[in-house]
Image: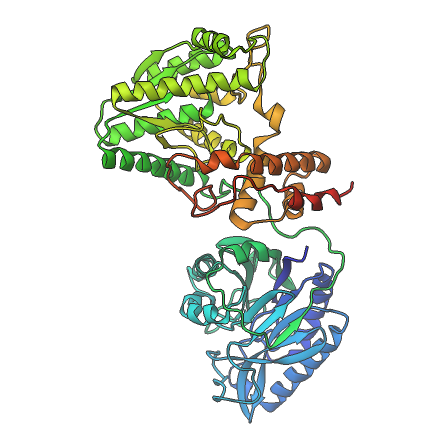
Length: 615
Protein backbone atom coordinates (compact mmCIF):
# COMPACT_ATOMS: atom_id res chain seq x y z
CA UNK A 1 0.00 0.00 0.00
CA UNK A 2 1.40 3.40 -0.98
CA UNK A 3 0.85 4.91 2.46
CA UNK A 4 3.18 2.40 4.12
CA UNK A 5 6.89 3.08 4.48
CA UNK A 6 9.08 0.25 5.71
CA UNK A 7 11.94 1.31 7.99
CA UNK A 8 14.74 -0.99 9.07
CA UNK A 9 16.91 0.03 12.04
CA UNK A 10 20.19 -1.85 12.43
CA UNK A 11 22.64 -1.67 15.31
CA UNK A 12 25.58 -3.47 13.71
CA UNK A 13 28.62 -5.05 15.35
CA UNK A 14 31.84 -3.15 14.69
CA UNK A 15 35.56 -3.56 15.14
CA UNK A 16 36.92 -0.13 16.11
CA UNK A 17 39.68 1.21 13.84
CA UNK A 18 38.94 -1.49 11.22
CA UNK A 19 36.49 -0.17 8.59
CA UNK A 20 37.09 -3.16 6.33
CA UNK A 21 36.11 -5.56 9.13
CA UNK A 22 33.11 -3.40 10.00
CA UNK A 23 31.94 -3.65 6.40
CA UNK A 24 32.62 -7.38 6.29
CA UNK A 25 30.35 -7.89 9.32
CA UNK A 26 27.71 -5.54 7.95
CA UNK A 27 27.22 -6.83 4.38
CA UNK A 28 25.55 -10.16 5.30
CA UNK A 29 23.17 -8.28 7.58
CA UNK A 30 22.22 -5.92 4.75
CA UNK A 31 21.68 -8.84 2.38
CA UNK A 32 19.34 -10.35 4.94
CA UNK A 33 17.26 -7.22 5.60
CA UNK A 34 16.99 -6.33 1.91
CA UNK A 35 14.74 -9.38 1.57
CA UNK A 36 12.12 -7.39 3.49
CA UNK A 37 12.24 -4.65 0.80
CA UNK A 38 12.71 -1.74 3.21
CA UNK A 39 12.36 1.82 1.98
CA UNK A 40 14.91 3.12 4.49
CA UNK A 41 17.81 1.38 6.24
CA UNK A 42 19.10 3.29 9.24
CA UNK A 43 22.52 2.51 10.75
CA UNK A 44 24.17 4.19 13.77
CA UNK A 45 26.77 6.91 13.81
CA UNK A 46 30.29 5.56 13.10
CA UNK A 47 28.90 2.21 11.95
CA UNK A 48 31.82 1.88 9.48
CA UNK A 49 34.57 2.80 11.96
CA UNK A 50 33.33 2.23 15.48
CA UNK A 51 32.73 5.15 17.81
CA UNK A 52 35.67 4.41 20.11
CA UNK A 53 38.63 5.22 17.83
CA UNK A 54 39.76 8.15 19.99
CA UNK A 55 42.84 10.00 18.74
CA UNK A 56 43.08 7.75 15.69
CA UNK A 57 40.13 9.57 14.17
CA UNK A 58 42.79 12.12 13.21
CA UNK A 59 44.79 9.52 11.33
CA UNK A 60 44.38 9.94 7.55
CA UNK A 61 44.77 6.18 7.05
CA UNK A 62 41.64 5.49 9.10
CA UNK A 63 39.67 8.18 7.30
CA UNK A 64 40.77 6.85 3.91
CA UNK A 65 39.85 3.30 4.92
CA UNK A 66 36.44 4.50 6.08
CA UNK A 67 35.82 6.21 2.75
CA UNK A 68 36.82 3.07 0.83
CA UNK A 69 34.43 1.05 2.98
CA UNK A 70 31.67 3.49 2.12
CA UNK A 71 32.41 3.16 -1.60
CA UNK A 72 32.25 -0.64 -1.35
CA UNK A 73 29.03 -0.41 0.63
CA UNK A 74 27.52 1.80 -2.06
CA UNK A 75 28.58 -0.70 -4.73
CA UNK A 76 26.87 -3.50 -2.80
CA UNK A 77 23.63 -1.49 -2.75
CA UNK A 78 23.36 -0.95 -6.50
CA UNK A 79 20.47 -3.44 -6.64
CA UNK A 80 18.69 -1.76 -3.72
CA UNK A 81 16.26 1.05 -4.55
CA UNK A 82 15.79 2.52 -1.08
CA UNK A 83 17.65 4.97 1.15
CA UNK A 84 20.50 3.96 3.46
CA UNK A 85 21.91 6.12 6.26
CA UNK A 86 25.32 5.00 7.50
CA UNK A 87 27.79 6.68 9.89
CA UNK A 88 31.57 7.13 9.55
CA UNK A 89 34.34 9.68 10.05
CA UNK A 90 35.41 11.88 7.12
CA UNK A 91 38.12 14.45 6.49
CA UNK A 92 36.89 18.02 6.16
CA UNK A 93 39.90 20.06 5.01
CA UNK A 94 42.11 17.80 7.09
CA UNK A 95 39.87 17.89 10.18
CA UNK A 96 38.23 14.60 11.31
CA UNK A 97 34.48 15.08 11.47
CA UNK A 98 31.66 12.71 12.22
CA UNK A 99 29.31 12.25 9.30
CA UNK A 100 26.25 10.29 8.28
CA UNK A 101 26.24 9.37 4.62
CA UNK A 102 22.86 9.21 2.88
CA UNK A 103 22.69 6.85 -0.10
CA UNK A 104 19.89 6.21 -2.56
CA UNK A 105 20.53 2.77 -3.92
CA UNK A 106 24.24 2.81 -4.75
CA UNK A 107 24.46 6.60 -5.14
CA UNK A 108 25.91 8.80 -2.43
CA UNK A 109 23.62 11.82 -2.05
CA UNK A 110 25.81 13.57 0.50
CA UNK A 111 26.94 13.80 4.13
CA UNK A 112 25.12 15.16 7.16
CA UNK A 113 27.30 16.40 10.04
CA UNK A 114 27.52 14.91 13.51
CA UNK A 115 27.76 18.09 15.53
CA UNK A 116 28.39 16.55 18.96
CA UNK A 117 30.69 13.61 18.30
CA UNK A 118 32.87 11.48 20.57
CA UNK A 119 36.44 12.15 21.61
CA UNK A 120 38.71 12.48 18.60
CA UNK A 121 36.29 14.04 16.13
CA UNK A 122 35.61 17.74 15.64
CA UNK A 123 32.51 19.70 14.84
CA UNK A 124 32.29 20.58 11.13
CA UNK A 125 33.23 24.07 10.03
CA UNK A 126 30.31 26.42 9.45
CA UNK A 127 29.22 26.34 5.84
CA UNK A 128 31.53 23.47 4.92
CA UNK A 129 30.90 22.42 1.29
CA UNK A 130 31.45 18.79 2.28
CA UNK A 131 28.11 18.61 4.09
CA UNK A 132 24.51 18.99 3.02
CA UNK A 133 22.68 22.01 4.46
CA UNK A 134 21.22 21.58 7.91
CA UNK A 135 17.56 20.61 7.73
CA UNK A 136 17.88 18.85 4.37
CA UNK A 137 14.69 16.89 3.77
CA UNK A 138 14.55 13.67 1.78
CA UNK A 139 11.42 12.08 0.38
CA UNK A 140 10.25 8.63 -0.54
CA UNK A 141 7.05 8.98 -2.49
CA UNK A 142 4.92 11.35 -0.42
CA UNK A 143 6.84 10.63 2.77
CA UNK A 144 9.32 13.28 3.92
CA UNK A 145 12.05 12.41 6.37
CA UNK A 146 14.75 14.28 8.22
CA UNK A 147 18.05 12.70 9.29
CA UNK A 148 19.04 14.06 12.70
CA UNK A 149 22.28 12.64 14.15
CA UNK A 150 22.03 13.22 17.90
CA UNK A 151 21.70 11.38 21.23
CA UNK A 152 18.11 10.06 21.48
CA UNK A 153 17.68 11.55 24.93
CA UNK A 154 18.17 15.03 23.42
CA UNK A 155 15.44 14.77 20.79
CA UNK A 156 13.14 17.19 22.59
CA UNK A 157 15.71 19.97 22.13
CA UNK A 158 15.38 19.55 18.35
CA UNK A 159 11.58 19.64 18.18
CA UNK A 160 11.59 23.13 16.64
CA UNK A 161 13.93 22.02 13.88
CA UNK A 162 11.81 18.94 13.24
CA UNK A 163 8.60 20.98 13.10
CA UNK A 164 10.17 23.48 10.72
CA UNK A 165 11.17 20.69 8.36
CA UNK A 166 7.60 19.48 7.99
CA UNK A 167 8.90 15.91 8.03
CA UNK A 168 6.73 12.85 8.57
CA UNK A 169 9.59 10.76 9.94
CA UNK A 170 12.77 11.69 11.80
CA UNK A 171 15.70 9.26 11.49
CA UNK A 172 18.12 9.36 14.41
CA UNK A 173 21.53 7.73 13.89
CA UNK A 174 23.14 7.76 17.33
CA UNK A 175 26.25 6.75 19.30
CA UNK A 176 25.26 7.58 22.85
CA UNK A 177 27.13 6.03 25.82
CA UNK A 178 25.07 3.72 28.01
CA UNK A 179 24.50 4.08 31.72
CA UNK A 180 21.82 3.04 34.18
CA UNK A 181 18.45 4.33 32.98
CA UNK A 182 19.71 5.69 29.66
CA UNK A 183 17.88 3.12 27.55
CA UNK A 184 14.53 3.85 29.21
CA UNK A 185 15.12 7.60 28.79
CA UNK A 186 15.97 7.16 25.10
CA UNK A 187 12.82 5.12 24.51
CA UNK A 188 10.68 7.66 26.33
CA UNK A 189 12.25 10.54 24.39
CA UNK A 190 11.54 8.91 21.02
CA UNK A 191 8.03 7.97 22.09
CA UNK A 192 7.29 11.44 23.48
CA UNK A 193 8.64 13.22 20.39
CA UNK A 194 6.63 11.07 17.98
CA UNK A 195 3.51 11.50 20.10
CA UNK A 196 3.94 15.23 20.66
CA UNK A 197 4.63 16.07 17.02
CA UNK A 198 2.36 13.38 15.57
CA UNK A 199 5.14 11.83 13.47
CA UNK A 200 7.27 8.68 13.33
CA UNK A 201 10.74 8.40 14.83
CA UNK A 202 13.37 5.76 14.11
CA UNK A 203 16.56 5.33 16.14
CA UNK A 204 19.70 3.25 15.60
CA UNK A 205 22.33 3.46 18.32
CA UNK A 206 25.87 2.06 18.23
CA UNK A 207 26.94 -0.59 20.69
CA UNK A 208 28.13 -4.10 19.88
CA UNK A 209 31.91 -4.42 19.50
CA UNK A 210 32.70 -1.03 21.02
CA UNK A 211 35.17 -0.66 23.87
CA UNK A 212 33.95 -0.54 27.46
CA UNK A 213 36.57 1.90 28.71
CA UNK A 214 36.09 4.64 29.66
CA UNK A 215 32.56 4.61 28.20
CA UNK A 216 30.16 1.75 27.68
CA UNK A 217 27.94 1.47 24.60
CA UNK A 218 24.81 -0.62 24.20
CA UNK A 219 23.31 -1.07 20.75
CA UNK A 220 19.58 -0.69 20.22
CA UNK A 221 17.10 0.42 17.60
CA UNK A 222 13.42 1.10 17.31
CA UNK A 223 10.55 2.62 15.38
CA UNK A 224 7.86 4.75 17.06
CA UNK A 225 4.70 6.14 15.49
CA UNK A 226 2.73 8.77 17.39
CA UNK A 227 3.94 7.46 20.71
CA UNK A 228 3.49 3.76 19.99
CA UNK A 229 6.52 1.51 19.67
CA UNK A 230 6.14 -0.52 16.48
CA UNK A 231 9.44 -2.39 16.68
CA UNK A 232 12.38 -2.47 19.07
CA UNK A 233 15.67 -4.32 19.43
CA UNK A 234 18.46 -4.14 22.00
CA UNK A 235 21.85 -5.75 22.39
CA UNK A 236 21.35 -9.05 24.22
CA UNK A 237 23.98 -10.09 26.74
CA UNK A 238 22.88 -13.69 26.24
CA UNK A 239 23.82 -13.47 22.57
CA UNK A 240 26.84 -11.24 22.92
CA UNK A 241 28.38 -12.09 19.54
CA UNK A 242 25.29 -11.36 17.45
CA UNK A 243 26.30 -9.60 14.18
CA UNK A 244 23.50 -7.05 14.54
CA UNK A 245 20.28 -6.11 16.25
CA UNK A 246 17.47 -5.36 13.80
CA UNK A 247 14.09 -3.66 14.23
CA UNK A 248 11.91 -3.33 11.15
CA UNK A 249 8.37 -2.02 10.82
CA UNK A 250 5.95 -0.33 8.46
CA UNK A 251 4.94 3.20 9.39
CA UNK A 252 1.65 4.44 8.00
CA UNK A 253 1.55 7.91 6.44
CA UNK A 254 -2.25 8.06 6.69
CA UNK A 255 -2.00 7.67 10.47
CA UNK A 256 0.83 10.23 10.66
CA UNK A 257 -0.83 12.82 8.44
CA UNK A 258 -4.07 12.62 10.42
CA UNK A 259 -2.32 13.77 13.61
CA UNK A 260 0.88 15.54 12.53
CA UNK A 261 1.27 19.00 14.08
CA UNK A 262 3.36 20.62 11.36
CA UNK A 263 1.83 21.19 7.91
CA UNK A 264 5.00 22.67 6.40
CA UNK A 265 5.72 21.08 3.03
CA UNK A 266 9.23 22.09 1.97
CA UNK A 267 10.59 20.96 -1.35
CA UNK A 268 12.80 17.97 -0.62
CA UNK A 269 16.38 18.11 -1.73
CA UNK A 270 16.47 14.45 -2.68
CA UNK A 271 13.51 12.26 -3.51
CA UNK A 272 12.58 8.90 -4.90
CA UNK A 273 9.36 7.15 -5.76
CA UNK A 274 8.15 4.05 -3.96
CA UNK A 275 8.43 1.29 -6.55
CA UNK A 276 5.67 -1.22 -7.06
CA UNK A 277 6.93 -4.51 -5.71
CA UNK A 278 5.89 -7.47 -3.64
CA UNK A 279 6.75 -7.42 0.04
CA UNK A 280 6.91 -10.22 2.54
CA UNK A 281 4.22 -9.81 5.14
CA UNK A 282 2.99 -6.73 6.92
CA UNK A 283 5.59 -5.52 9.41
CA UNK A 284 3.62 -3.68 12.07
CA UNK A 285 1.45 -4.89 14.88
CA UNK A 286 -2.28 -4.33 14.40
CA UNK A 287 -4.41 -4.96 17.45
CA UNK A 288 -7.93 -6.28 16.83
CA UNK A 289 -9.02 -4.05 19.74
CA UNK A 290 -7.44 -0.69 18.83
CA UNK A 291 -9.54 1.31 21.31
CA UNK A 292 -7.98 -0.67 24.17
CA UNK A 293 -4.24 -0.20 24.84
CA UNK A 294 -2.32 -3.46 25.11
CA UNK A 295 -0.07 -2.05 27.83
CA UNK A 296 -1.47 -0.33 30.89
CA UNK A 297 -5.03 -1.33 29.97
CA UNK A 298 -6.32 -1.47 33.55
CA UNK A 299 -4.98 1.99 34.35
CA UNK A 300 -6.45 3.34 31.10
CA UNK A 301 -9.87 1.89 31.92
CA UNK A 302 -9.74 3.33 35.44
CA UNK A 303 -8.92 6.76 34.03
CA UNK A 304 -11.67 6.52 31.44
CA UNK A 305 -14.31 5.67 34.03
CA UNK A 306 -13.11 8.56 36.20
CA UNK A 307 -13.41 10.95 33.23
CA UNK A 308 -16.87 9.63 32.43
CA UNK A 309 -18.01 10.26 36.01
CA UNK A 310 -16.30 13.68 36.06
CA UNK A 311 -18.17 14.72 32.91
CA UNK A 312 -21.49 13.77 34.48
CA UNK A 313 -20.62 15.55 37.72
CA UNK A 314 -19.79 18.73 35.80
CA UNK A 315 -23.18 18.64 34.06
CA UNK A 316 -25.01 18.14 37.36
CA UNK A 317 -23.09 20.90 39.13
CA UNK A 318 -23.44 23.41 36.31
CA UNK A 319 -27.19 22.84 35.90
CA UNK A 320 -28.00 22.53 39.60
CA UNK A 321 -29.86 19.29 38.91
CA UNK A 322 -29.61 16.86 41.81
CA UNK A 323 -31.35 13.80 40.39
CA UNK A 324 -30.60 11.40 37.52
CA UNK A 325 -32.92 9.02 35.71
CA UNK A 326 -32.21 6.26 33.23
CA UNK A 327 -33.79 3.20 31.68
CA UNK A 328 -32.21 0.03 33.06
CA UNK A 329 -32.42 -2.93 30.69
CA UNK A 330 -29.97 -5.40 32.19
CA UNK A 331 -27.64 -4.91 29.23
CA UNK A 332 -24.05 -3.62 29.13
CA UNK A 333 -24.74 -0.01 28.19
CA UNK A 334 -27.35 0.83 30.82
CA UNK A 335 -25.29 -1.06 33.41
CA UNK A 336 -22.25 1.16 32.80
CA UNK A 337 -24.43 4.28 32.80
CA UNK A 338 -25.86 3.31 36.19
CA UNK A 339 -22.41 2.57 37.60
CA UNK A 340 -21.24 5.97 36.33
CA UNK A 341 -24.25 7.66 37.94
CA UNK A 342 -23.49 5.93 41.24
CA UNK A 343 -19.86 7.07 41.11
CA UNK A 344 -20.93 10.66 40.34
CA UNK A 345 -23.50 10.66 43.15
CA UNK A 346 -20.94 9.40 45.64
CA UNK A 347 -18.40 12.08 44.74
CA UNK A 348 -21.06 14.81 44.89
CA UNK A 349 -22.26 13.53 48.28
CA UNK A 350 -25.71 12.82 46.85
CA UNK A 351 -27.80 9.92 48.15
CA UNK A 352 -28.02 6.94 45.79
CA UNK A 353 -31.82 7.36 45.97
CA UNK A 354 -31.32 10.42 43.76
CA UNK A 355 -30.73 7.94 40.94
CA UNK A 356 -34.01 6.69 39.48
CA UNK A 357 -33.46 3.40 37.63
CA UNK A 358 -36.52 2.45 35.61
CA UNK A 359 -37.10 -1.06 34.28
CA UNK A 360 -39.66 -1.05 31.46
CA UNK A 361 -40.35 -4.63 30.35
CA UNK A 362 -41.80 -4.99 26.88
CA UNK A 363 -42.55 -7.70 24.35
CA UNK A 364 -38.92 -8.77 23.99
CA UNK A 365 -37.72 -8.55 27.59
CA UNK A 366 -36.21 -11.80 28.81
CA UNK A 367 -36.29 -12.97 32.42
CA UNK A 368 -32.49 -12.95 32.52
CA UNK A 369 -32.05 -9.27 31.67
CA UNK A 370 -35.11 -8.20 33.67
CA UNK A 371 -33.98 -9.81 36.92
CA UNK A 372 -30.38 -8.70 36.38
CA UNK A 373 -31.62 -5.11 36.07
CA UNK A 374 -33.61 -5.38 39.30
CA UNK A 375 -30.67 -6.98 41.11
CA UNK A 376 -28.32 -4.25 39.88
CA UNK A 377 -30.61 -1.45 41.05
CA UNK A 378 -31.00 -3.11 44.45
CA UNK A 379 -27.26 -3.68 44.88
CA UNK A 380 -26.54 -0.02 44.13
CA UNK A 381 -29.31 1.15 46.50
CA UNK A 382 -30.92 3.48 43.98
CA UNK A 383 -34.60 4.34 43.47
CA UNK A 384 -35.85 1.37 41.46
CA UNK A 385 -39.13 1.64 39.54
CA UNK A 386 -40.80 -0.95 37.36
CA UNK A 387 -43.17 0.24 34.62
CA UNK A 388 -44.42 -2.24 32.01
CA UNK A 389 -44.94 -0.77 28.55
CA UNK A 390 -46.99 -3.68 27.15
CA UNK A 391 -50.47 -2.26 27.72
CA UNK A 392 -49.57 1.22 26.50
CA UNK A 393 -48.00 -0.20 23.34
CA UNK A 394 -51.06 -2.37 22.63
CA UNK A 395 -53.21 0.74 22.94
CA UNK A 396 -50.82 2.70 20.73
CA UNK A 397 -50.96 0.04 18.01
CA UNK A 398 -54.78 0.20 18.11
CA UNK A 399 -54.61 3.99 17.81
CA UNK A 400 -52.36 3.95 14.74
CA UNK A 401 -53.88 0.82 13.19
CA UNK A 402 -50.82 -1.37 13.41
CA UNK A 403 -51.19 -5.15 13.53
CA UNK A 404 -49.41 -6.32 16.68
CA UNK A 405 -48.58 -9.62 14.95
CA UNK A 406 -46.41 -7.76 12.41
CA UNK A 407 -42.96 -7.54 13.97
CA UNK A 408 -41.55 -4.78 11.77
CA UNK A 409 -39.72 -1.52 12.42
CA UNK A 410 -42.89 0.09 13.74
CA UNK A 411 -43.29 -2.75 16.24
CA UNK A 412 -39.73 -2.26 17.50
CA UNK A 413 -39.45 1.53 17.45
CA UNK A 414 -42.78 2.11 19.19
CA UNK A 415 -41.39 0.34 22.25
CA UNK A 416 -38.18 2.40 22.24
CA UNK A 417 -40.12 5.65 21.91
CA UNK A 418 -42.56 4.71 24.66
CA UNK A 419 -39.67 4.04 27.03
CA UNK A 420 -38.10 7.40 26.20
CA UNK A 421 -41.41 9.19 26.76
CA UNK A 422 -41.70 7.59 30.20
CA UNK A 423 -38.18 8.66 31.13
CA UNK A 424 -38.64 12.29 30.06
CA UNK A 425 -42.03 12.59 31.74
CA UNK A 426 -40.63 11.14 34.96
CA UNK A 427 -37.68 13.52 34.66
CA UNK A 428 -40.10 16.44 34.49
CA UNK A 429 -41.91 15.29 37.60
CA UNK A 430 -38.68 14.59 39.49
CA UNK A 431 -36.63 17.52 38.12
CA UNK A 432 -34.09 14.92 37.01
CA UNK A 433 -31.55 14.61 34.21
CA UNK A 434 -32.25 11.82 31.71
CA UNK A 435 -29.04 9.87 31.13
CA UNK A 436 -28.52 8.50 27.64
CA UNK A 437 -27.08 5.00 27.61
CA UNK A 438 -26.32 4.48 23.90
CA UNK A 439 -22.70 3.96 22.87
CA UNK A 440 -20.35 5.01 20.07
CA UNK A 441 -20.72 1.73 18.16
CA UNK A 442 -24.51 2.02 18.10
CA UNK A 443 -24.24 5.64 16.97
CA UNK A 444 -21.94 4.62 14.11
CA UNK A 445 -24.31 1.90 12.93
CA UNK A 446 -27.47 3.93 13.51
CA UNK A 447 -28.56 1.15 15.90
CA UNK A 448 -30.94 3.35 17.87
CA UNK A 449 -34.45 4.70 17.44
CA UNK A 450 -34.76 8.30 16.29
CA UNK A 451 -36.88 10.08 18.88
CA UNK A 452 -36.40 7.09 21.17
CA UNK A 453 -33.21 5.95 22.83
CA UNK A 454 -31.39 8.42 20.55
CA UNK A 455 -32.66 11.18 22.88
CA UNK A 456 -31.45 12.06 26.37
CA UNK A 457 -30.71 15.01 28.61
CA UNK A 458 -27.04 14.05 28.61
CA UNK A 459 -25.25 11.10 26.98
CA UNK A 460 -22.74 9.42 29.29
CA UNK A 461 -21.68 6.48 27.08
CA UNK A 462 -21.64 8.00 23.60
CA UNK A 463 -17.83 8.39 23.45
CA UNK A 464 -17.29 4.72 24.27
CA UNK A 465 -17.46 1.89 21.70
CA UNK A 466 -19.01 -1.41 22.68
CA UNK A 467 -15.66 -3.18 23.09
CA UNK A 468 -14.54 -0.55 25.60
CA UNK A 469 -17.84 -0.66 27.48
CA UNK A 470 -17.50 -4.42 27.83
CA UNK A 471 -13.93 -4.01 29.10
CA UNK A 472 -14.98 -1.25 31.52
CA UNK A 473 -17.81 -3.29 33.02
CA UNK A 474 -15.41 -6.23 33.26
CA UNK A 475 -12.87 -4.07 35.08
CA UNK A 476 -15.52 -2.79 37.50
CA UNK A 477 -16.69 -6.36 38.11
CA UNK A 478 -13.14 -7.53 38.81
CA UNK A 479 -12.57 -4.78 41.37
CA UNK A 480 -16.01 -4.94 42.98
CA UNK A 481 -15.88 -5.90 46.70
CA UNK A 482 -19.62 -6.73 46.81
CA UNK A 483 -19.97 -10.42 45.87
CA UNK A 484 -23.65 -10.12 44.93
CA UNK A 485 -23.03 -7.10 42.68
CA UNK A 486 -19.95 -8.77 41.21
CA UNK A 487 -22.03 -11.86 40.31
CA UNK A 488 -24.71 -9.73 38.65
CA UNK A 489 -22.14 -7.78 36.63
CA UNK A 490 -20.52 -11.02 35.49
CA UNK A 491 -23.85 -12.42 34.29
CA UNK A 492 -24.56 -9.18 32.42
CA UNK A 493 -21.16 -9.54 30.73
CA UNK A 494 -22.09 -13.09 29.70
CA UNK A 495 -25.49 -12.05 28.28
CA UNK A 496 -25.74 -11.67 24.46
CA UNK A 497 -26.11 -8.07 23.31
CA UNK A 498 -29.71 -7.37 22.27
CA UNK A 499 -32.20 -4.48 22.07
CA UNK A 500 -34.88 -7.00 23.13
CA UNK A 501 -37.59 -5.51 20.95
CA UNK A 502 -38.72 -8.82 19.45
CA UNK A 503 -40.32 -11.70 21.42
CA UNK A 504 -38.02 -14.18 23.19
CA UNK A 505 -37.49 -17.77 22.07
CA UNK A 506 -39.93 -20.44 23.20
CA UNK A 507 -37.59 -21.33 26.08
CA UNK A 508 -37.60 -17.69 27.26
CA UNK A 509 -34.08 -16.90 26.05
CA UNK A 510 -33.21 -13.77 24.08
CA UNK A 511 -34.64 -13.96 20.58
CA UNK A 512 -32.91 -10.96 19.00
CA UNK A 513 -29.12 -10.93 19.06
CA UNK A 514 -27.45 -7.81 17.70
CA UNK A 515 -24.21 -9.41 16.57
CA UNK A 516 -26.08 -12.05 14.59
CA UNK A 517 -27.80 -9.24 12.69
CA UNK A 518 -24.96 -6.73 12.30
CA UNK A 519 -21.84 -8.79 12.75
CA UNK A 520 -19.27 -8.76 15.58
CA UNK A 521 -18.87 -5.48 17.42
CA UNK A 522 -15.11 -6.03 17.53
CA UNK A 523 -15.07 -5.75 13.72
CA UNK A 524 -17.27 -2.66 13.61
CA UNK A 525 -15.27 -0.99 16.37
CA UNK A 526 -12.09 -1.74 14.42
CA UNK A 527 -13.53 -0.07 11.29
CA UNK A 528 -14.75 2.82 13.41
CA UNK A 529 -11.38 3.46 15.08
CA UNK A 530 -9.40 3.77 11.86
CA UNK A 531 -12.11 5.69 10.03
CA UNK A 532 -12.67 8.30 12.75
CA UNK A 533 -9.07 8.76 13.87
CA UNK A 534 -7.16 8.37 10.62
CA UNK A 535 -9.73 8.66 7.81
CA UNK A 536 -8.74 5.38 6.15
CA UNK A 537 -10.21 4.64 2.75
CA UNK A 538 -12.44 1.52 2.56
CA UNK A 539 -9.84 -0.69 0.86
CA UNK A 540 -7.34 0.14 3.57
CA UNK A 541 -9.86 -0.57 6.32
CA UNK A 542 -10.33 -3.96 4.71
CA UNK A 543 -6.58 -4.58 4.43
CA UNK A 544 -5.95 -3.68 8.06
CA UNK A 545 -8.90 -5.74 9.30
CA UNK A 546 -7.79 -8.80 7.33
CA UNK A 547 -4.40 -8.55 9.02
CA UNK A 548 -5.74 -7.94 12.53
CA UNK A 549 -8.34 -10.72 12.33
CA UNK A 550 -6.33 -13.23 10.32
CA UNK A 551 -7.44 -16.72 11.31
CA UNK A 552 -10.54 -15.33 13.05
CA UNK A 553 -12.73 -14.13 10.17
CA UNK A 554 -12.55 -14.91 6.48
CA UNK A 555 -11.77 -11.95 4.16
CA UNK A 556 -15.15 -12.38 2.44
CA UNK A 557 -16.91 -12.02 5.81
CA UNK A 558 -14.85 -8.92 6.68
CA UNK A 559 -15.71 -7.35 3.33
CA UNK A 560 -19.41 -8.08 3.83
CA UNK A 561 -19.43 -6.46 7.28
CA UNK A 562 -17.38 -3.49 6.10
CA UNK A 563 -19.91 -2.77 3.38
CA UNK A 564 -22.69 -3.02 5.97
CA UNK A 565 -20.76 -0.69 8.29
CA UNK A 566 -20.31 1.96 5.58
CA UNK A 567 -23.92 1.69 4.47
CA UNK A 568 -25.29 2.07 7.97
CA UNK A 569 -22.77 4.80 8.84
CA UNK A 570 -24.11 7.07 6.12
CA UNK A 571 -27.77 6.11 6.62
CA UNK A 572 -27.63 6.90 10.35
CA UNK A 573 -26.03 10.33 10.16
CA UNK A 574 -29.35 12.15 10.63
CA UNK A 575 -29.57 10.58 14.10
CA UNK A 576 -26.09 11.75 15.04
CA UNK A 577 -26.81 15.25 13.72
CA UNK A 578 -29.54 15.56 16.36
CA UNK A 579 -27.56 13.97 19.18
CA UNK A 580 -27.86 15.34 22.74
CA UNK A 581 -24.94 16.85 24.63
CA UNK A 582 -22.08 14.62 25.67
CA UNK A 583 -18.43 14.74 26.69
CA UNK A 584 -15.62 13.99 24.26
CA UNK A 585 -13.51 11.60 26.31
CA UNK A 586 -10.84 10.94 23.68
CA UNK A 587 -9.92 11.66 20.08
CA UNK A 588 -11.99 9.81 17.53
CA UNK A 589 -15.68 10.29 18.34
CA UNK A 590 -18.73 11.74 16.63
CA UNK A 591 -18.19 15.02 18.46
CA UNK A 592 -18.30 17.96 16.03
CA UNK A 593 -14.65 18.51 16.97
CA UNK A 594 -13.80 15.19 15.31
CA UNK A 595 -16.41 14.36 12.69
CA UNK A 596 -19.06 15.91 10.51
CA UNK A 597 -20.93 14.79 7.40
CA UNK A 598 -24.20 15.86 5.77
CA UNK A 599 -27.19 13.84 6.93
CA UNK A 600 -28.20 13.11 3.34
CA UNK A 601 -24.75 12.11 2.08
CA UNK A 602 -23.97 8.58 0.94
CA UNK A 603 -20.77 6.55 0.95
CA UNK A 604 -21.61 4.32 -2.01
CA UNK A 605 -18.98 5.97 -4.21
CA UNK A 606 -16.28 5.33 -1.60
CA UNK A 607 -17.40 1.73 -1.26
CA UNK A 608 -16.97 1.01 -4.96
CA UNK A 609 -13.28 0.27 -4.56
CA UNK A 610 -14.20 -2.74 -2.43
CA UNK A 611 -15.90 -4.27 -5.48
CA UNK A 612 -12.50 -4.75 -7.09
CA UNK A 613 -11.32 -6.95 -4.21
CA UNK A 614 -11.48 -10.60 -5.19
CA UNK A 615 -10.68 -13.75 -3.27
